[in-house]
Image 1 (tube, one colour):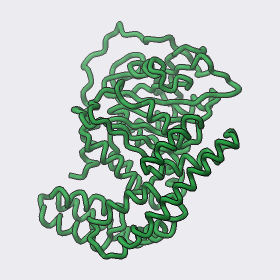
Image 2 (cartoon, one colour; image 1 turned 90 degrees about the horizontal axis):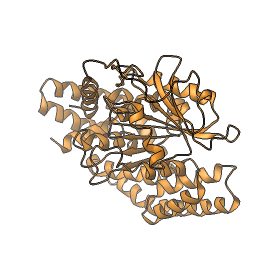
Image 3 (cartoon, one colour; image 1 turned 180 degrees about the vertical axis):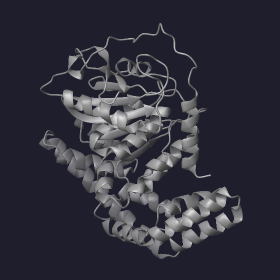
Image 4 (cartoon, rainbow, N blue to C red; image 1 turned 180 degrees about the horizontal axis):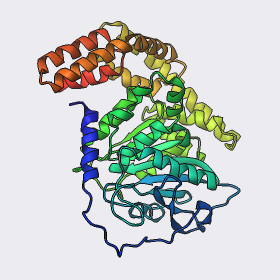
Length: 413
């Protein structure tokens, strides 16, 4: 079964686990407000967006309407609500200078806001975000979610990319209706999507949502050449939100957007030592592009960009030889995906990337046709015929997104 079908199935399972009856005595844990601008500094209130979704909103103590503040939107897991997550951000000093918004799912039984999201939640969440952005002075917006909220995060950023600069989906997956290849024929939308930095978080010891689901979500963006992408995968982390590396993910998102230069540039220097040139390059470009970054910091960013270009120039001849060697796609494709992730944004890699994308466009129709055929054969129990079709796909359309699934399925046959 295709990984995204598993993702959708798990989302529906999480969605189904709803308590049978509401408790009438349940009351909102915070007072209500009619508009976001009515929420006092240092306080949290319950609001209702124009399209009906309820959400909790916290305005930081030092919020200055003239200077503005970041907006961090975070979506809860199944059978939870926003206030079971929101207080942890200021408590752990995770982006506690930000306006924090915690939507409540539209189905369930809590009188102050229901406790489960659905596949149709993305427009409602976008409505919440637009209301807050329109009422308060928001400098930039990140969105994330845990478990059920992690699944939904991918849907929201793919369908409403104009609203966000970063995302941190946790312990979730990207189901097939949101996979980034679906926008290949809409380059103007895909260009907006690729501007969003995505920090995927998934613990390797997660007993609720299998770690492979997080890997899948990361991979579908990696094989589409998303330039601002990172996978946080702690060895011992289970399904606990409070133990997740949220602080590190937020720092990385800031660096990808040219924010917090003191810490961001220091982090980028460490990434350079580890050979993570994709992050180094994107951070360097982001800091150079901002008007509020000092000249000395811009100079540091320029040096980091130069190092990334030098590393790409060194790595590119080897990748070119590999592509020309005629090896099996199952051999060179995984190496290409990593090369693209690390060096794809450099000038040195530009000719190879352009050639790859041109071939992908030429082979796209063939890849889709063969993938659909293989998927149908798999569902009807024709396993051997399915594998034969996948092998044909790798021969005729190895540059396509569908080749990712062919390599994955054949490796696990």
